[in-house]
Length: 141
Image 1 (cartoon, helix red, strand yellow):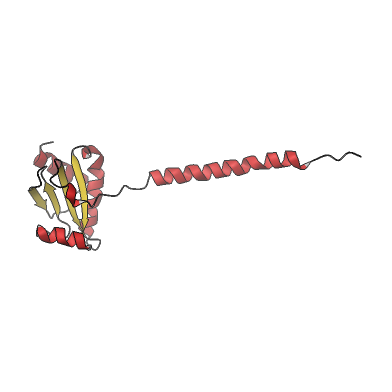
Image 2 (cartoon, one colour):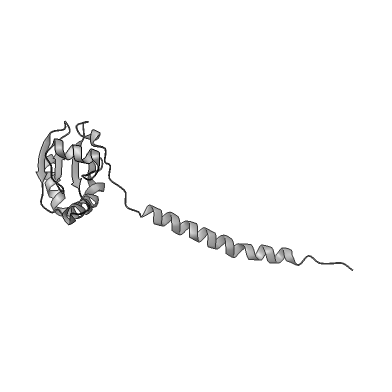
C-alpha cells in the first residue's frame, strides 16, 4: 500500500499567512522609524564655520525651551541648506561651558552669523511663524 505525503501541501499553504504577517510587521516598523523626529545637533564647533547658526540653550524643566524646540523643528526643512540648527543642553558639562562663555540663560535662542558673531539673542517664546520672521529679518533670507 502506498502512503501519501499529505503534510507537504498543508505546510506550503500555512507559510503564506506567516510571511504576510511578518512582512506587514516589518513594513509598519519601517514606517514608524521614518516618522520619528530627527534630533538636533549639539555640535557647537559648527558655529563660525561659514554657515549661519541658530542655537537654543535648552533646559527640559522650562516649558518655553520645549516650545522653542518645536518651532525650530517646524522651520528646519525650509532653512536646512542655509542654517545650522543646534541645541545645547544646559545640564551637560559642555552645555554649561558654552552658556557661561556667552552669558546665556536657559531658553535663550541665539542667532550666530556665518563668522561666529552673535547677531541677536531672544528669550521670548517662539512659534514657527515668529521664528521664520526673525530668521528672514536677521539673516535677510
